[in-house]
Amino acid sequence: MRIDEIIAASPEPTFSFEFFPPKTDEAEAHLHAALDDLTAMTPAFVSVTYGAGGSSRDRTINVVRNLRVEHGLEAMAHLTCVGATKDEIRAVLGQMREAGIDNVLALRGDPPGGEEKFSPTPGGFASSPELTALLAEEFPFCVGGAAYPEPHPDSRHEDDDVQTAKAKVQAGARFLITQIFYDNADYFSFVQRLRDEGIDVPVIPGLMPITAIGQSRGFLAKIGAKIPDAYRRELDAREDDPDALRSLGISYATLQAAELLAAGAPGIHFITMNRSPATRAILSTLRLQRPWDRAATPA
Image (cartoon, rainbow, N blue to C red):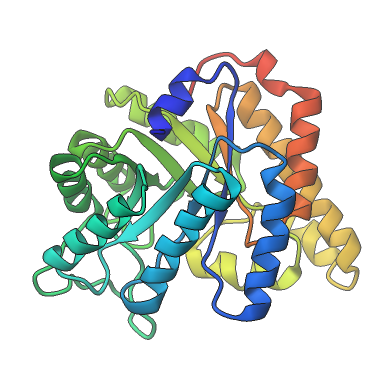
């Protein structure tokens, strides 16, 4: 089923999960354990990240197929422009269609390892709006796009991320999922600026609780996610107490999600890192408290 139809038909916010294709037997075991737990949480849909070319691409398609067939989940495949020509991307899209995939998240993608700046593959796409247009024009997928409440590392000016999101929607994206953020004011401001531009598609917040100090100093720094100073101080104060840090991260993410939903966000997309405990705790609390019953204006 198309994700835009799922969102439109849902009387309540939609909750969804992001996974990545495992590369080792141990990682695959972690994924299956997480799936066993999270499938019981009845997500509206799930998504699977994508690496350019070769086995990573094939793993994405295989994981999405298995999520649909073995777990009965509506699964969306990520797709990037990196490392492939237009014809190669068309071939991948054909494989996705044959696998029964209905939804694709169109992304430009990060530069390959060791490179600081994105460079289009010769004969490939230079941007996600270009990839989105191909999907919308030549394939029957429901297309989603990424959005950046905080400046993307390649943003040229303060309005660049809004204009890029607008271009994605104009090219055919039917919904947007944001990059991870930790200050809700950034999300609210971004959505309002989109609405001022006449863009009215759902903008789903992407959230990831901080459950380890290395996570906040490594992965989040790499993607450019800003951690508010007060929150950073509390995380640092628990550096030597992993359980306390994990509890703080789950509590913060729960409050963050509750505020977003009370303000009208259409759902939450949880970045699970192929683990289930934090996501289960947050989502269970949200469903008990139902902050969306206080929602004002849809986002």
